[in-house]
Length: 292
Image (cartoon, rainbow, N blue to C red; front, side):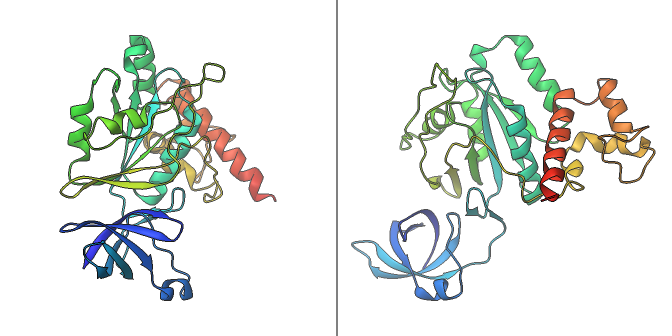
């Protein structure tokens, strides 16, 4: 019998099987011996021990299409990253780090700016211009007002989508509107620090219908860049590519070199200054860590 791991807690794995629903399973000792840990999102074969009580053992993990480290999940078709337009204001640097990580794993990403009802048109224009040429789909929503929810549903159809974003941006509110059976705990935004209280405590795959799944992940406030080399990250800023042929030096880092086509494009307003400054900051952070 085959199913998909939707949740793992304290050594128990909850496997969604089409004909049965959720089956509570333990992983066989052979996985520990091979130092293989089942992940949320894994397709697995199970040995059903008790059909009435829905108990079983995981006996095999099928090959993974991909695997993320943070969060530790597998077989993701796309990522859906939620930031608020306001309250809290978007942390562009954190967003760009997330986009870099998804680019590295080859996972298509949709960026959803929520709470559009709180923003002025000029705020929305800045966001559009900043990410227009990033290579990622950008959408706007207002979960509280129900704006954009139907469109989001069409984007998720038939896919396993990982939802992520900082706390307090409305991620759980969006998820609650995807299906009447989903009731994620929503968190207030702290007035003092304009950040949300964490509401999601572990990764959980939620079956919506058919082969449509969404994975809710704990709210994050930082992403480390240990997995990157400084020379690779310019390739994750898609808008740089068309201007790199104008750089005087091959392998230009676009940080300090003279006659840099990318820096010239930033000066001319063809590349977002916000994106470029985030790139330089991340580049320097990685380079500094390499010294240690």
